[in-house]
Image 1 (tube, rainbow, N blue to C red):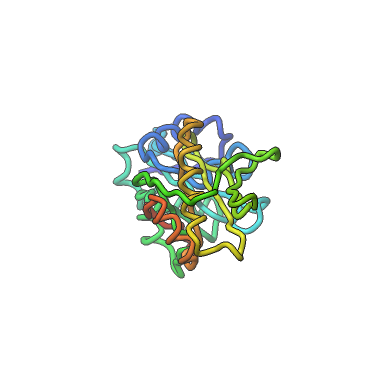
Image 2 (cartoon, rainbow, N blue to C red):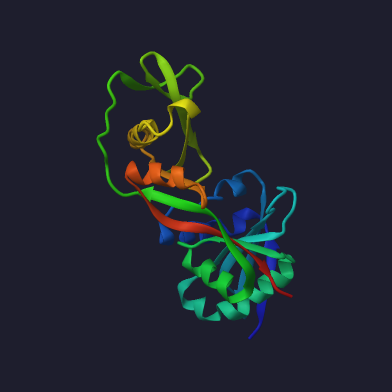
Length: 237
């Protein structure tokens, strides 16, 4: 069975990427890479029939192309993953792989072909709404476009959104000033960011380092739940 992998312009795999995102229906962390020109794309074929695509980018330096982060096969051809993925790795010359564990197709390849696997980040999705209030505290957007939480006339937290993810998902971020932590401001601020995201017709999502227990607890208290992890691994020879 002849497997071919060719580097192609993004436009040649756009239809396949749309199928990938539609099928998985979750926030895809590195979606922005394509529009920013930080990724290369490859088209897969078996016996001259298109079966899927893959993408690589730079793990530590955006100019590099050393990490596989997308691998998608259309449903009838997924049984050939063990033929296509090794060829993709050889042609792309990538020594590393990363994936979201909620991307089951690529996660299978991580555990089948990678070593020294570790988790860097926890991924969160919205699970339920909360109704926190703190007296004399308000949420607003400032003149610079950033959102702030103000208590008794003093800004105690700030944050906003990063549009790295595929539409309609949006990545929330926040920071509570050090002397105002552990007072409930983080969860209140996240709650209000969630509400604002829906008002903007976006779906709130978030992530944090696997060792950041404080941030994890804040997000979960505000109604977010763990939906996956971001994994890294080394590809063997």
